[in-house]
Length: 591
Image 1 (spheres, one colour):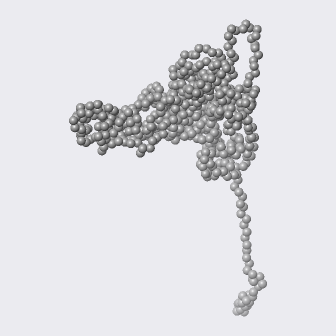
Image 2 (cartoon, helix red, strand yellow):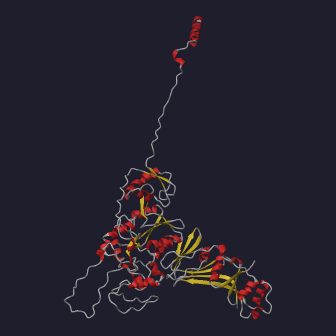
């Protein structure tokens, strides 16, 4: 046993002193790992100001069908964007490349019509309009319409893919001949001489000259009622189109559009605030137009109507329209809601709800999907009547939007100042218990004065928003003055004496003038020349539109001018400015 142990110890000793050949270089192990660096699918796009998803995809050449196919892939590639319908400038969005982009549209032919032979005129497409019909009503000859004018129209309207895709409510630019003249490059527009067709008939003693070809008419601005002007739907020349709403109202509102008469005749009796038109002479068909332009009576602008007018008013009432022409909204679970914003605008109300104004028929499934997304669908007529739109909003949201009757005065008292308001279109908006009044103030004629400077600011302080429109239904108000630029005089006894300036100073003040303001006020009270009451002013624009303001004040009686003394709490510079413009000499009583 002892021998075996010694043998084992010896073997271990020999093993420890032995250096094998493979131990001279220690074994080293190397590991290599290849990591793939594949790029993310799709292409990046940085959102710019004014862009939305549908527009981005359209600009990249995708069609409407392709955009619908791309939507699920876009949503999967962009988990960092919670709402693809509300992109923000600077966001990076990835667009998949699974659907081939459409080929770019072919270049449009350039129209070789001299720019000096036509003028650009804005027009809002009405339901049932065609481009040929619109240009014919503008006086463009048929041979030009079916010639170079189609190319010129497409050149002026790059957003219109072709002439057969006009939509109701769409704003387009029309090329209209200047002064009824034709471009020099189109000699075919001059009609050839007419052959006599009544040679076999007995000759007339005084044959009437042949009528001139149709020319663009000129509109003469005349005062009309606010309802007719706001609600009427006419074509660009102002002539009511057959079958369109508002034709009867437009015809009753003012005189017919003057046109070239076929033969001289007695001038018609003039209507109120319009001048009789002289009969047109066959040898000078443009005489009336030139004379009207020279005297300043002609007016080619037309009142804004339709959806653009509705946007103007509702935006002032703090409604926000979603930008863009089309948009896609993901439905809960699966599917998408496709909204054509150019015909069915999406609006966010001041209290937060979303409204879809729908003037075109929609299926029950489409409406149900919109309701699933929290959008309230308000069905209206295609003529876009302001009163109808306001009525629909009031019916849909009775707790937030209430219309005030046009026949009743709305009387308010804000911070001691009394207000009396009346308008055909006035609404009370409730936003979380804070009520504001919105009223439309529409001037009746181009020459009517706007509301005075400072009145808008006074009404804003009273939570009253006035949407002031000119005679063409466009926003128009005087610019606001800086508050610190308005002088508010503090009453002193000598300033008051000079302002009162009575006819007989000795009888009014006595032989000795008061020594200070307190003595002057006491003297005026003793003679009953200082009375507590109200200082008021009012403005109106036609029947049914009025603003009145009443301010508590001390009225000085018996002077040469209307002198009032205001308490310090009514010393707002804008209020003092408005009263001063209405003929008051205002002083603020010192503390």
